[in-house]
Image (cartoon, rainbow, N blue to C red):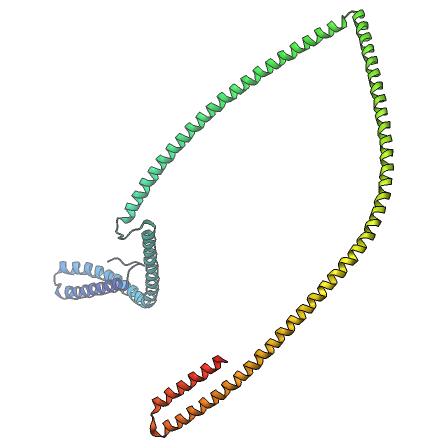
Length: 354
């Protein structure tokens, strides 16, 4: 049995017992061989065997010493092994917890109910299949996008070529138009320069006559406008005079109207005052009559209240008498309550009649 640093306590003890057993067996065989050797050959062989046994005994002694040393260090080895066992147990617990957590995460992530030994392999295969499918879809999308970009680029290139061609055509037409206009301008300029001097003078004369006629017309219009302004100024002066005279007449009429209005107002005020005094006298008499009527009504009510008070006192006295009789034995408690209710009802009725 091979013993190393990773051997357990049980393995070390088993190895020790096995070596000890072999040692005892060898010692017994040595003793037995020494007693039965009698011939010379046997002696020679015995000598050889003794040498061998001695060497073997030396090895056994060394082994025993080693085992004793191992036994001496056995306690510390056991302690170290215990510590390692505890450490390994802690690691095992940690690994088990991590495995349980990973299983829980797998259940939550992939919605798994039963986790088996092949679950991870199945998930990996599904993941690889999804990766392959997504990669194919991505490649397809990239190809489609690339094709679309190439189509758009080709269309843009054609559009750009068309635009450049249109711009070039427009520039050519503009340049031709400019050249044609320049030629026409030079032709007209040369034509004007080659006009006959007489025609030029005739045109100048016509322009002078037109200018003179225009000046005469403008002067005539100015004269007519000045005459109209002078007439407007005269009309304005006459209107101012009329306005001044009208203001004097208006002041006189206002003064006369005020005097006449004062007289009329005094007369109307006098009439209104007399009518108001008569109304006040009538209202005073009316209020006086109403006061007298109210006083009479109050007196009647007071007289009625006094009568009702007397009737109430009489009724209460009667009720008290009937109650005394009921208490004395002529009636029971129910009759007393009924009489009391009747009395209270009569009292309420009398109070309402007030």
